Image (cartoon, chains in turn blue, orange):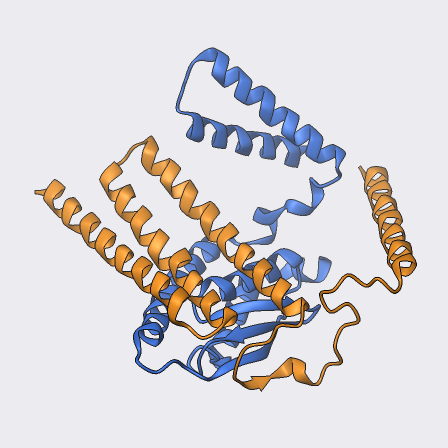
Length: 164
Length: 148
């Protein structure tokens, strides 16, 4: 119940930001539609699984986001150099990367972080490892990918890891 | 003074973002095969769009527009990689492999039975599997109901 109320408030805040029209009628429409959405979601039985904030440490998450932005910037530059080089690379790889995250949502964060970093794309997800396609030797940096995985692991709450 | 500084910063990010958009599009044309082109698209997704929206946010100042742009960046950074992954996974499942690979962990794994083609031979089996799956999910939802 508590979680449903939090979700309603979150959706309503999203409505207020996106609409920008602050008349009573429109605001009431927003409230009604966010309540309706959460009601439908709860009938689908999906409310329980989306406790992202309870499973993640928020400030660690923000720090991770900052670190990831810097990594994306570096990788962007590296792949741009590959594209602008005279000789096209012939070093493509499919490599396996261990995914030690306990919860599904952390695995999703890890896989998406790999994909959004240029030079590496997550191709397939197995239960305990990901298959990653790397464009060049530099992108297939195993130590770097393991480091990213460890950082995502550190985002999870330690006491919740066994539970989920 | 500050407005000039903001203008300079936003124009810098517009120009750098435009450069990355151009390089990404060039890569889509130049690179050797589907798998390499995917990475060019990923440059456009991250650096190109990110920097151009950052420039717009600087122009917007502290306002509702900036909040909306920040939400756009957030949603794009979640959905962009998901879409790339969906495309890559579809290609992988249909048996496509990169052009000249130097390393392949999947080479030793036996190929999956359904290699992208609709398996005409055994429709019954697929149906049975899907119905079993749906009954499973039905059970799961029932148990969730009970819990709540």
